[in-house]
Amino acid sequence: MSMLAVSSLAKRYHRGGKPFAAVDDVSFEIGPAETLALAGPSGSGKSTIARLVLRLTEPDAGRIAFEGADFLALSGAALRARRARLQMVFQDPLAAFNPRATVARVLDDPLRIHNIASRAERPRRIAALLERVGLDANLATRAVHEISGGQRQRVAIARAIATQPSLIVLDEAVSALDVSVRGQILELLLDLQRQERIAYLFISHDLGVIRAVAHRVIILDAGRIAESGDARAVIADPQSAIGKALVAATPRLTRNRP
Amino acid sequence: MTALLSISDLSVRYRRDGVEVPALKGISLDVLAGERLAIIGESGSGKSTLALAVAGLLARGAKIGGRVDWFLPASAGAKAPLSVLPDISPSRGEIGSSAAGSLLATSKIGEGGDRQLISPLEGEMSGRTEGGATERLLLMPGGNTPRLGGDIGFVFQDPSSSLDPVMPVGKQIAEVARTHLNLSWPQAYAKAATLLERVRLPDPDTALRAYPHQLSGGQKQRVAVAAAIAAGPKLLIADEATSALDTIVQAEIVSLIRRLVSEDGMTMLFISHDIALAATLADRIAVLRHGELVEFGETGQILNAPRHAYTRSLLAAHLGLEAEPLLDRQGASA
Image (cartoon, rainbow over all chains, first blue to last red; front, side, top):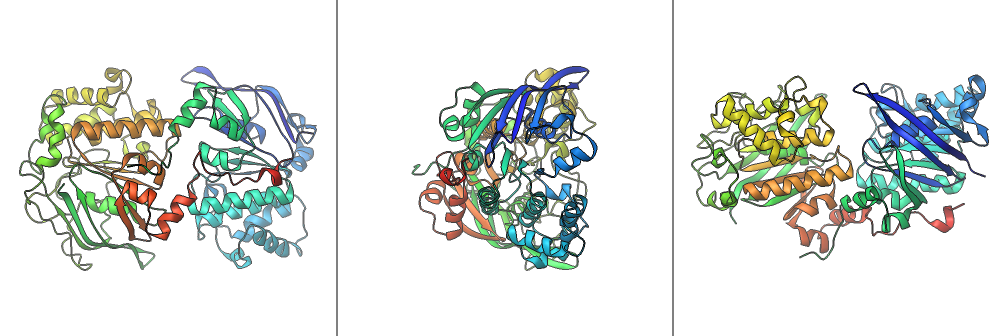
């Protein structure tokens, strides 16, 4: 059974008075514990698809089935309940959090809002979440603007897993991190996927990162799917023009150069 | 090859929340005339501070020690450099070596954290691509002080903030040419049109009158590059100039910069967090970490025989298209 099934999704925006298709007839499925990557140049529709799947934006056409339910038909309490199972991590956690909030507050919110733990129980749950993402429990009292970028992204992941989601949308979640930190965060995501069987919709402009962590990849161009398939196979031998251009543009570490 | 500039024991400290934070600790290196030198490092390595120090763009509060000596030819630093000439000539490639030899400018930018030599900016800040109004050019005593915009072109990461949003891009480029090459406005606009062609902007005549918001990110960065090279600088500094762009546009801008640097015989300082990207462009690579120069060598040596453990860890952390995926398919696949 697919965790998420998207069919014939479409979204048009207006630019300079003229309509243009940000997302045009996009269909895909993600299974449990699977990572599906969305790749493509700026403006190809990657982030719009993320926003549609999260229902931060309503589509003009198409269907989204999440855990078997018609996700677009949900509203009110039913939508809120289902949303706990569908989480997100963005590129810049500082923009996603109240910067003056403490780490504890950031993690307390989802536990409270979704009635996951009682007030008395929450500090212990917060400590456990921090430990799960490789952070010291003492970090809970720090403000989110005081901690490093890598630590903040771990807090964002802790917040995302607080509600025990089946799917996390990761929109350029490792793009702003230093390479040494990036590797650790990717390892953490893979470990969580193995342990909790979480599926990822992994959005990135970086084919190297996608190849390292994704099972399948969809390459987008101007809102449409240009090609899709096994991540390693597509990146090794892209068939579409945009896929070829993306692979050709990715910098190589060519050893043994003169 | 001889040095265009020589950095000796350069230290920079910033004050943050009342505490002094070292950004650079005793960096010494020569930038050779005509070479493409990449400075790489992670956040907090000091790579951008080094670029700003070379350009004389450090914030006024910065405490600076050490020196930067420039070896500019007599014609530079004052009047029209070679690129006033109507168009590109292949002989431009000679600038690098003709700049060699004559030690004409030995600029001292302070010793042992002494702030006395740091004076407020004299004259204008020149081109629009060169940062905010709060920044100050270090006044360097002695002969030919390199002029930002004239002798040094600077391309920043985000063209949306380095370009003036309410001025047509043609004027922003023409302004640099007018200021540094003593051109009239019509001459400066003609130069701007030529430059927009050189940076391959589609329909340059229309683009002259466009405002930055009417251009894509990649087109804006092409405009920023055009403004940076408008006065024919000896040194082009690109500080994470492609980091905000997508992979395809990044490759286009890198290829554009490579072509322009080669055509004009410029020396290039390429600041990047991406060792693979830097390696596609650079003759030599300097690796910075926590404000220190940990390794410096030819690109081939850095890639094939890195001496420092940190360089090896950067190479190992690179996720290329040939590396073994992190994903264990047996373990994770459903």
